[in-house]
Length: 310
Ligand SMILES: Cc1ncc(COP(=O)(O)O)c(C=O)c1O
Image 1 (spheres, helix red, strand yellow):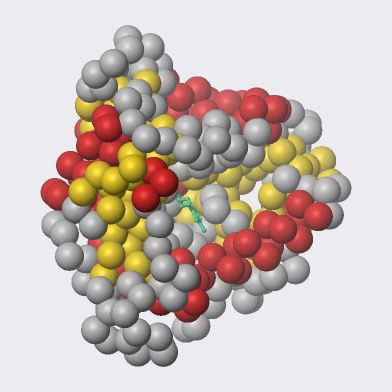
Image 2 (cartoon, helix red, strand yellow):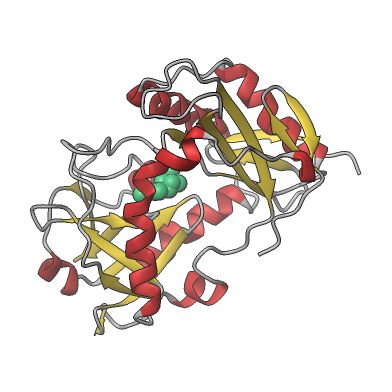
């Protein structure tokens, strides 16, 4: 993965990539008290560029910070402008954006009430997160031995830095066992989500996904999938379900900014449906990619246009 770029936006200004560094005593590096986002910018068939659902992503960043009691020293409009500026400064007609809010290195200890709240926005070119083949033909997943965050212990609606250890250990466990991704169950045994994706199953033409109020991140791609399904008149049911129901699904797919719409062809060595991406997964995926990369005029409100000067 090539992560270099010319510039990174840090605390209100663009700095050279090599200078976008922090001290080893940075508070968030030790305790994970911070929040982040993952956002994609796409180039469409007509050559125009847009950031997909930029406002919603930054709203979630502010909500994540609010949940943990961090005050971001910028307005959402300033961060919208900064996100676009970062892409433009790197002449990226498409790319992945990573805004990060973190506490500085002024003091250590859990409280550190007076540490400066810092904000960075980096960008890099990120291809298919679960691989081109996975995007097209589906991935192999494993139910994780690690449970998804309990809402009384962690703040499940926030993209909080330290909480991602839960996802990282599940992902590494799955990769070491030869799978592409882990599926997390909640602490009651209901299917929750992937390590960085929401999960959908399809049974007899109906899309079923864990309800927003359960232990899942409120994915912006999840919301997109639900909207696209409604646009197509596909029935959607948000409800809890167990792993055995998942094993018997006709289709399973994951959604996320990084993973986009990735079909799952196998779970715990059991074939999902025919073992090939199913009809509903393909329909939703086609509609999604038409909107982000294609030429459909649908859902212009999701595309925050910008220009790149060569
Ligand atoms: C745990 C988790 N679930 C779901 C998602 C998908 O969310 P989104 O579609 O907003 O990227 C992500 C990615 O941000 C995630 O980290």
